[in-house]
Length: 598
Ligand SMILES: *[C@@H]1O[C@H](CO)[C@@H](O)[C@H](O)[C@H]1NC(C)=O
Ligand SMILES: *[C@@H]1O[C@H](CO)[C@@H](O)[C@H](O)[C@H]1NC(C)=O
Ligand SMILES: *[C@@H]1O[C@H](CO)[C@@H](O)[C@H](O)[C@H]1NC(C)=O
Ligand SMILES: CC(=O)N[C@H]1CO[C@H](CO)[C@@H](O)[C@@H]1O
Ligand SMILES: [Mn+2]
Image (cartoon, rainbow, N blue to C red; front, side, top):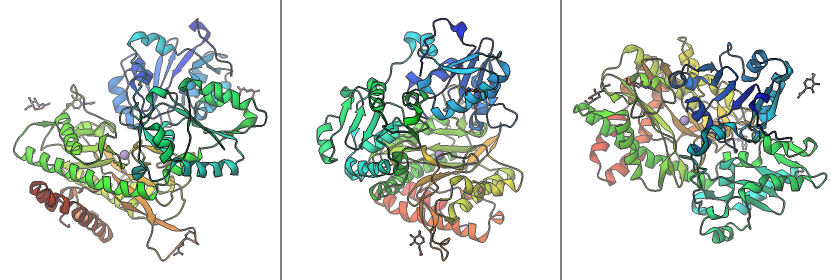
């Protein structure tokens, strides 16, 4: 790959500003928030394009409203996902002069995204060129926050469950099957999981900046040695491995060294950067999702136990918060979106093994709830009142698991329409959550189950139904997912994967409704076994009541009534002994009320 250093910007007609960092992380540290810096739009997904005379931003349905608010008049919002919106590459091909060059930093762009754009541009003789110096960094200058450099902690086997040596064995097997000599790993959550270590370089995501190269007999970690945990040596002993540490910045050199041996085959994920991928000659590349990504998505026994336990503790904090909130509002106390979110965090902080939040709390009242990824700021916060729907989507990191849960309440008198759509969202969640399906069907296949009750009255929601969840790792975890969109690396749903189940409905300018649980994939008690493919279903591990006041019972089937009553019984059975033992009779009586059968 020939990296071009831009001295005179007249050599490019457009510059793409992706939201990725060099590891293609979903969330970035402030240093890497280049797209937010240049455009003002700070949602987690979006790509900016700057040409000589225009500035455009592509983002998906979750962010249309937020982007409209945050972009100023210099920017054109391109609503990704609408059939009328051209893709970025098509737009550039149609709007730039024939033969134009489009620049992009190849570290910040995955190979998978690069290729189709290259092809789209080719139709008008335009081309994508890798630019060595990042133009946004040059504009940002000394005000750009520095790269984070936080120290790493080891995760003990009592939480991780499986040694690094054992994980390496499993990876080695897969490498042998594919005849790969080396595996390049650039995804931060894969590295953290594999090495049984956690960091804090990116807010809410317990990861650290590093790369990894795995061969049959060597485990190379590219990480600045000052960041290493103080117990790094005993960690290696406990995990029965020797990890060779090299400087973070030497990853490119090492890849070039490995590929210089003729005939070596290098495994790299198509989601890794174009920069790393292009260092490997095409004939030596194996471009598939890494075996670590797949192994990580199926939780081991210790991770499963931790997931279940952390959700019980999280449920206690949620109930304490909602009980408190309802009581405050009943007594005319003033609570706003931020003071509410802070109170919830304070309840979580008292829970055992609590580390931090897993994403910024979406504490949203009334119309703000219709902004799917809203989170309150001191300028935009609204009061939580008896007249509005309150949507609260939040989650935490515990040493033994990661949580993500949404509940929607109306503390006053909801309208019939609000009750109807709440009930239909719940129907979708119950239908999806109770379905029995053949092992390894792709998540996409099940998506419709969660939408049907809304589709019946011409309504829908513009986000996915479910995403994988990391174990004390990223709250959004691939390669699985449930949504309208095809997930290219989805290996199909398998026992002991954990995903979210979160249908919703949003009325712009009025309210938002979402109900979200985390579910574990478990064998189904079924007389059928799909010709020995295996029958699977979901087990809900989130423990928090869903407001029954919002339900129109007549819209539910007998089975759905049974399912919601059974869920509330489980919540009561799991949480009430703990609240009793803690002497929290206030929350206990709220829980009693909220878990009554309908
Ligand atoms: C662009 O298309 C032409 C003609 O189809 C082809 O020869 C060329 O290799 C393509 N270039 C790239 C970069 O794909
Ligand atoms: C929210 O409540 C505070 C305290 O009562 C009040 O001063 C403020 O005007 C309210 N804000 C809105 C938008 O109603
Ligand atoms: C169903 O199929 C799975 C996968 O082949 C197998 O492991 C399981 O034992 C089967 N269960 C029954 C009850 O036959
Ligand atoms: C992002 C956003 O639209 N926030 C809105 C939340 O509600 C307050 C109060 O009504 C508005 O001022 C904000 O604009
Ligand atoms: Mn979620």
